[in-house]
Length: 124
Image (cartoon, rainbow, N blue to C red; front, side):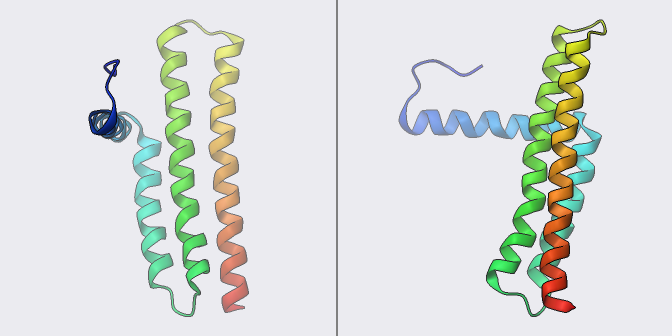
């Protein structure tokens, strides 16, 4: 996809364009991405608006949902590659998809734990 030889500002512009195409593809083709993005925006707004939080608390509450989004994008990329090259069922294809899903699940659990720790330390 990328043109070889692009350097400097042209490389940055190209990389940004490809990143935007990836986000657009995730929005169009991935229901989980859309759901998690809406939840991430809501959680980020909540983190910024909750009273009595330190800047570090706000940062911790806001950043973890965006890490979930990052892992979801990587999971979607894995799934797209597996689907592209593995039309028939194969144990390794299933394992790759399950591992990607497990990574998202673990990041969701870590995010939940982050919110529980921060909120209970401030409000309980």
